[in-house]
Length: 330
Image (cartoon, rainbow, N blue to C red; front, top):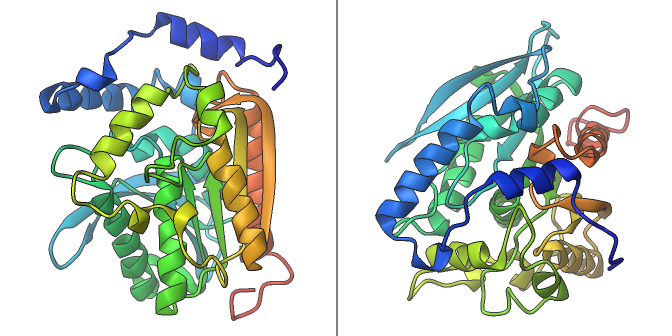
């Protein structure tokens, strides 16, 4: 890595103004307090200076998905213009793991809704906490996807044109959804993984990027260790929620993997690309020099976010609304 490669000035300033925390000593009560304060901030109008302003071509509203055993809030983005007919579905999962809200991604999700156009459903899944492992978020993402597809007419979506899109921990959730979709016969047209965290096994830290960027301003090794500890408590099967360690990556939906270079989990994305290619799954990979983890949610301070958003939109358009799309979803 080039020694002069540094995060953008805005990211460094935000990091300098932030408060250091001892992630290893964080209690359950500390986690709740931190999460509630952080999510209020991320959903505020003032935060949009950093997280970006929603596209005016989309209408955004909260809805609830009623499942057999629980309700899940989702943030639904629809184009304001009446396009006529059913639209593609993009199921989105935000990043954060033990923190985060769908509202922090409005800049990119509203853009996709307006510009593809599509219905973008962003899942406000259960967050990691003592007693709430990663499987809870994985189930929330999958169950919302199934519900919307099975009730396509009510949602105004075309069940033959469905893609999944996740960031960080959300990329883990949608990568696992793509695997489950293959195994259950649910047809996905595409998957997009942005700065994906894809391994919570003991090998998660066995990558050069983990050492090289352990103290990056937007994600540190200490935070990842807390994330891992919450994600797979004692007795849980880490392999079952680690796409990078999946036995078979063949037959999956075509993937776009977006990797910022100043990211502890950059090598998770790179190795996943290698494994997808080796398995014969179509995959495109892009890297963003000088961009930190979570950069797609920080367009106000990371210029590369706009480039990445265009890549995501172009990739999804080619599989969901492009000239080559057929009734079968290709």
